[in-house]
Amino acid sequence: MVFYTRPQITEARQLIYNGTNWVNATGTTDGAQQTYIKDSEVITANGSVDAGSNPGNVRLTFHIGGRKLVHWHVTTDGAADLVIEVSPDGTTWYETANSTSLSAAGSWDDWDFIGYEYVAVKCITANVGVTAYISAKL
Image: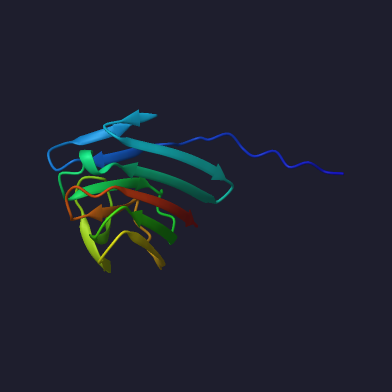
């Protein structure tokens, strides 16, 4: 019988833009919680912000290291406009064509080929709780 041992996490970082500044989330910071798992070429991560900490235009940002195939699952606790953004450096952001408008609490599940260092789920709508799950593969 062979047992597989997962490699140690070598990189874990999440930045959250709260409309004014960047918050480097470690554990729980300003309502954001994250978990990273690195298994070979796949990275999975999740982040969240509660409604009271969302002034609008909040980014749940993930460093994916240029991995190209990105899958996201986003849930909200109310109506929300959401968009996927990408960045080569974590500073300059570009909106992608991937966006949706949820008319009530619900979820958005999709994927795309990204290839940037950073990907973000941006919630344009204020006072909405958002949770994002990201998986990225080379």
